[in-house]
Length: 422
Ligand SMILES: Cc1ncc(COP(=O)(O)O)c(C=O)c1O
Image 1 (cartoon, rainbow, N blue to C red):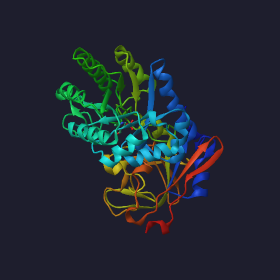
Image 2: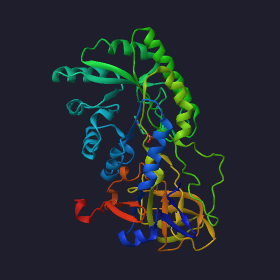
Image 3: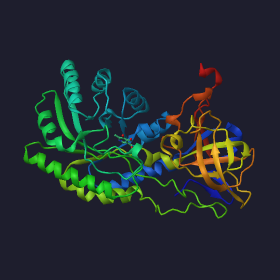
Image 4: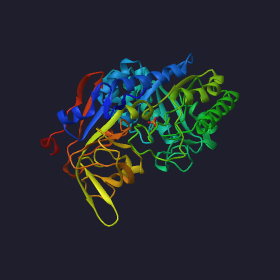
């Protein structure tokens, strides 16, 4: 179900018209649907069926404390990439034995902190990191559980900036060295080798790269078993794509003409890989971030003014790349729609923010419903990698965040004040 949708001509989040929230809390404003988050999380759980599993929510997608609490209460684990994220996860109530720690550059103090908390496993990205974790564990008189993050050299067919499983990327241990590194890791007495980790990229919209990865993992686990190394745990990573294009439909709104078909649902991604992975008898963990939170979120903004030159029309809004970096960072597409549809007229425009950078745009040469000064717009599918990537650039306070549950509204992060900019 889509919890952010039009009823007649008014865009709602659950039972609340978004324009009411814009009027009350101001713009720019992030709004999230609680039930959309829960539905997405639960669709992963039901897709995993009877497998011995754990869903570890990737905090990097959205680390709002209240959202983390919600997922921790549902029984989610956490995928963290820094001591800071580990701190946030613990504070929100995630159980340490459901936490995995990834990232190419873990500092000694971060490893020490994670070992003290007795997290489930470190996802190790290099031989030098093996040495560091081993040294810190030895010093602390502890045994560190580890999985090796193997880079299978598989093309995720996503944007190059969010592709992580190719040999040219900085992530993981190269596939050709996997057996050698496992064999070496097995000799280090302060490490307990539990599993294998892969994460080939983000916003992957086809099942094939995942199937290829699953087959690779099964092959490697088989070879390791022959060599006497018996892994019991697969961490398959995240990266499951979401529907950004034509996310919300209304007869008055232009639709993108695209060959890009409907993105598979979580259960479809899982159905494609579980039969392969299950043959190993290992527990199967996954680390979805975007696919749990992206379509539960919307960024509300207001048109400050419009202007035209000989080439283009610009719609200048009160939100910019400091609030939502994805279009500037990876030319990411977000659908932009009015909170209230008053016209069938459309126009081709650039939607730009107030920041002094040419990369401060949310859409270029995009056919949109005609908008005027003062109109409210919704930038859709912005729950993931939205607020977390925000900054105070150009002296702009960060937006507020609101969680909607039915007809109830909760401010889960107040708007930053000018005084907090110092
Ligand atoms: C190791 C790891 N796991 C999980 C994720 C979450 O990915 P996504 O938000 O695409 O599900 C990421 C994102 O980059 C990651 O690096």
